[in-house]
Image 1 (cartoon, rainbow, N blue to C red):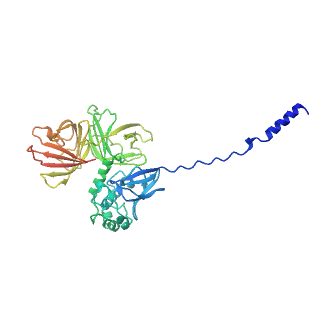
Image 2 (cartoon, rainbow, N blue to C red):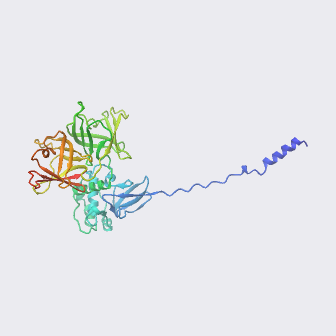
Length: 432
């Protein structure tokens, strides 16, 4: 046998026998599916305690802080016995506005939910939390939150649950619409919850002397602008209504009062070919306004705004009631009366009264100081487009004195018309 043949035979034996490479590899066990991460959320109209909740993976009742558990991406349904609230996306803070899928606190569903929850509160004081009792759960029946507030209040199902709700003090009717909305508003402010684009916004960078947007949570807005160096722009304010689509943030406006020409939101009206405004709040808490001037689907420019903080007097205030000579407080009769007090010592007065021909509607802008002992305000007016309304009178010799006092989310303006040390007029403002 040749040496060459022998070598080939040995080689064949080595490769044909005993090689582990031909053995099947052991199957790798699949990694175990990780347990879903449970997140804690809150149901708020102040903390709602003892209400049932259900998600795809979690269920129970909210704890003493109004907290519930959920997994990222789930929806949550709250319920009082057989009375079920509409489903909504589970998140860190859920309010009636989320459940109703709206940014408007005057929406029927929002008002009805807030009135029901606050009426069912065990101790009748929703400022310290809303506690739902087992009695309420046992008495509850399905209700229709989409009804008008009057229809909802007259509903047999609503009256059955509120009269058998286990409250410390028996009740026979829902809390008022005004009280319910006021409480919900206060909660949103105190919890720092951003609702859509609601707030007072000033541009990060802008060439105007003054520019501001106020989006209220009742679907109204104010735009104010001063630029006396640009002859093509009209300085002043506009006030109207707005709507905003949830998916892309498109804002459509309609003006009720407009003294600043084509500035502001005048162009952003309903229509397929009209200029478009898209407004959304980013992760940094800034309002980003993007403009599609020719409605062709492309971004033609953008502007970023910072949100005004609420700190003592600093904030935006809207008049609620007015009383004369210690008389009964009456609703303010203006269409809108508001003040914006800024941290830099500037202020904006905004007033519209379309029914009073003796008053000039519009805006006023200036600077202010507050006396630390008396809380009397002094101002210097920079721009005035509303005649003798606003703070105009207090700049004149012998003019009235106005003292401003803040208590939480309420501002009281005590007006001493004749400087005799007696308050002649009291105006109560609500923080926005």
